[in-house]
Structure formats: structure tokens, C-alpha cells
Image 1 (cartoon, helix red, strand yellow):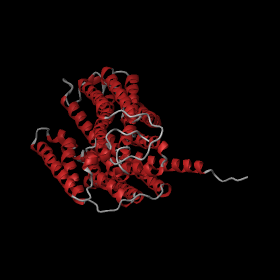
Image 2 (spheres, rainbow, N blue to C red):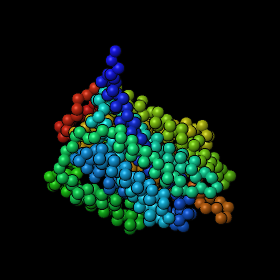
Image 3 (cartoon, one colour):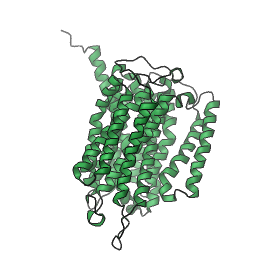
Image 4 (cartoon, rainbow, N blue to C red):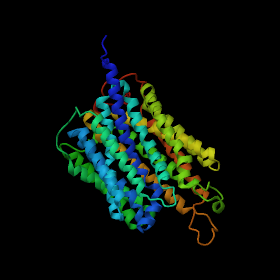
Length: 496
């Protein structure tokens, strides 16, 4: 009797291994974005820098991701996705080591810049899935990899809280943890992900990449630093004006060069454009939830009249971890929803859950069960949203544009996260508790959190508008042919 594994079984196992390796890599990428949030105070005290200076620890990663993600996504499409993945993960390992060993702020920022370049892993991972996973299994695979983004962001907050909970806490432990995860992801991709079959070749549009990078720098820099610079300051307004000018320059370049970094027909193709707008709003909601809840539960009730007097550890484990776990568990559900009902339905459900979750937080954030329950609902909303967006994009662009299209969508989510961080910080700084005892630093008033949560609900309500009016209805797919080029499509295609 033969013991040979049937081809279908062997193929399924191979797909599972690939999805596992790429999910781990995507999770590590998302961890890098939120990792330093709970330890900025420790970093500031240890390195002897100001609040404005230490904020560059998070800003540097965001800006690095904005510059390198589209370039590396396109490079992977042209020259091979696996080699690009391995190289980027190697850079992330080096960056994590540099951050862990840094004894000065410039060195720490250098490490964070190298970590930020690894954001390109996510669009590259989706492109690999498109090549290696059967069409009927692709939505579930993409949803699982996408779901690890929200899970990884929450996991980083929890793990950092655990590692820095003692009286002699050292923030460097968090970066050593990041090094270990990055090395594990590198080994997983190196040994478990097959070599790329589709390569487009051609020239790299370095001029377009430079123009896009400058545009994103000028846009994201004032968003992330506006609360320090002042929203009406010359630097802030000048940066926004420069971003507008550079956007026009970038579009002109892309229309003129023979092999553009971004095909502008693809960029403005309705499903792709709507997915990017949804990415901004969902990214905004995710960060508004993380930061809003984290700050809320740490407020000292005796001084402010609200809050839970939670430590960083309690805030991470009790209040944020449940939502992160649910976001991971919801990702395969989102994949099935995309497969059987289409990405539009998944996005509508994400919008409904997010609006309900943030509305619940706005109306009742004085009870532990409410804060945790609402956070769980928002976590599921983010997971469904992340499942829908790659499905829309993958069904709307040809193979050779997968990397850059998902890279732009990654940037849209990062932009939304940056806007969410800036909005939450600005609101909480502008609404403070009156009549605090002498020597107590300003603390945000409860109304600031209420406003933050209502804005989060509004963001998800806008996602519903995008899904309803921006995306056309699609039949529930049971399987689909390979998508046609963006320019040839006139309706939202069914997800595979």
C-alpha cells in the first residue's frame, strides 16, 4: 500500500506553512510600530531628552516606512519577492539590535529608521500569497496575514508592559524582544517561503520614488509633530504646502516616465482609491482605540474623577490584550466573509462594529466591562477591515502591480495611524482638568476622551459610506478568475 501523500494534501500543507511564515513576518512588522509607545517615558528619562525629542522614536519609523514601502514593494515585483523579503527582514534585525544597544537618541532613531523600512514586508507577503495560494483559499490566507497586523500592534503593547513592569525596568528589553521576533521571522521566510516565480524586470523609477518619498515626508512630518510645533506654525503650514506642491510634481513624473513606480490609472482606479481611503480611516480608528484606552485607564481617579489607576502592565494585559486576541481570531472569519459575500460586505460589517464599539466607549467608559467589551468589538472591526482591503486591491490590479498597490495601501493605514495619534494627543492636551494640586502636571479632562471616542465612531461611519457608495456590489464569489488590469475593469471584482 502506498504511503505517498496525495498532491492536494501536500499542496494544502505547503500553503499552510507559507501562510504561517508570512503571518509571523507581518505580525513582527506591526509590533515595530507600537512597540515604543508605552516606554517613551522610560526612554526620555534614561537618555535625558525632552518630550519633543523622544517623539522622534515613533516618528522616525513612520517616515521610514513611508519612504521605503512603495519602493521596496515595486522592487519585489520587478526582481523577486523572496530575496526582497529576506533582505528587508535582515535590515529589521540589524535595526532592532542597533535600537537595543543605543546609548544616545540619534543611534536609537537610526535603529527605528531601519525597523521602519521593514513595513514593506506586508505588501510583499500579500504578493507572495497571490502566487502561491489557490484562488479559493486566497481570501482566507490574506485575511489571516492581515489580521496579524492588529494582533501584533496589541501584542507589542502587552509584551512591552510585561517587560517594563518592574521597579528597575529597562526599555532596551523591549528592543531585544523585537530582535528575537525579527530573527525568527527571517528564518521562517528563508526556509519556508518558496522563491518568486513572477518577475517583471525593468528599471526602477528612482526619480518617482524620491518624489513620492519627499511628498510623504512633508505630509506625515507635520501630522506627527504638529502638536509640538503648533498647528498654525510656519513649519507645520509650510510642510503641508510643500506636500501639496510635491504631490503635483510626483504625479507629473509618473505620467512622463516610461516605467513609473505607480501606474496612475491603477492609483485612481475606483476600488483601489476607495480601499486606500478606508485604510486611512481604519488605521485612524485602530490607533485612536489603542491610545485612547491606554491613556484613559491610567488616569488617577482621585485627581481626575475618572479612570482606573492602571499601571502600564494592567492597561496592556487587562484592557488591550482581549481586543488584540479577538482581532486575530476574527481574521479567518473575515476571510470566509470575503470569500462568500465579497469584500464590500466585510467592510460594511467592519464599519458597523467600529461605530458601535467607539459609540459604546463614548457613552460608557467608567466601567471595566464596558471598556474591555468595546475594545473587543473595535478589534474585530479592525480585523474585518484589514481583511477586506487587500481583497479589493488584489482583485483590482494585475500581478506586476500587486506589491506597489498594497504598499500604497500600507502607507494609507500608517497615515491614518499617524493622524489618529496626532488627533488624540492634541485633543487630550487641549482639554485638561482644572484645579489640580500644586506640582501635578496637566492631566486630560474626561471630555477629551469622550470626544476622541466619538471621532473614532465617526471614522468608522465614514468607512460605511465608502463601502456603500464607493464600492460597487459584487456577487458572493465561490472562485474567481485572475483579475484583469485595473484600467480594463469597470466594477468592483469579486474576491477570489
